[in-house]
Image (tube, rainbow, N blue to C red; front, side, top):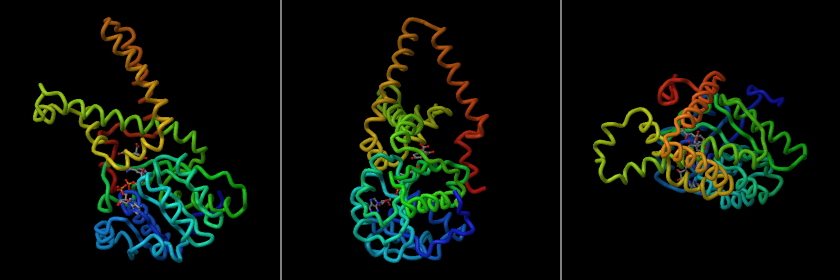
Length: 313
Ligand SMILES: NC(=O)c1ccc[n+]([C@@H]2O[C@H](COP(=O)([O-])OP(=O)(O)OC[C@H]3O[C@@H](n4cnc5c(N)ncnc54)[C@H](O)[C@@H]3O)[C@@H](O)[C@H]2O)c1
Ligand SMILES: O=C(O)C(=O)C[C@]1(C(=O)O)C=C[C@@H](O)C=C1
């Protein structure tokens, strides 16, 4: 990658979907002086008004077409379920030569839709692996992407204009503090199915199961909610629409890792039933070693709440 953040300055950035991720990117771009003007469009008029009054964007548009007019950068930060219609809009209205990036948590479905956008519009699928359980423009903050990975899954194009666009997308994410990795969309979807999608599915299930337990009162669940369960409730508080779309658009990979997970769970169920302490110890020892390796590699802190209390540092 050759471009440095010093050389990176967009004339007009259009943020489509001004929620946690779109607003965070807008804040980070503003802090880094990466765009002369930031416009925003959101389907929800109330979100548009809040984003404007919070100063997330300089102006709001009444349509996708109005937002991207004159934009040399378009950021698609809506739930993944909107990707087909956004690509149809980008195809019809984005400027020739504009860089389009998305932020979706799933990449295969995005690549499929992005291939239908005309070639003069340079669509580079991206996934910032950074987030919180919050949503909406109020939740955005400029440091969200710092020291986090952003995965780029470029389309199968070798022309010079597209290669330059991939470099520019990488420079954008680096300029907001991320480390950039490039990979194949299918590999991304499998890797993220295990590291992000399955953990969310488990959290939704666990918290729901606790709620269904009639003999344990809700007050008791809150009262005895120690670290482990509390962390699961944070994840389970994540946006239902976003996560519905993730599971509908990464079906195969999620079903693959879910199959493996249920096999592991059955193994533990059997060990508990038969009093097989050896197996339990073996499995738990492996878990502890993996966690320690992640902390040692500097990917995580040992602080509770994933070090998020440091977000404003
Ligand atoms: N939340 C996270 O932790 C996280 C992390 C990384 C990536 N992502 C991905 O980033 C994207 C945005 O997530 P978020 O957490 O910011 O969601 P969010 O719910 O905070 O914001 C999404 C916004 O998009 C708007 N929207 C929906 N459809 C639209 C359309 N067709 N046109 C214009 N606006 C539309 C909604 O009104 C909403 O305001 C998702 O694809 C998600 O998978 C999320
Ligand atoms: O920390 C959280 O709250 C998140 O869930 C962030 C998280 C993740 O699973 O790590 C969620 C979805 C994204 O696509 C990327 C990041």
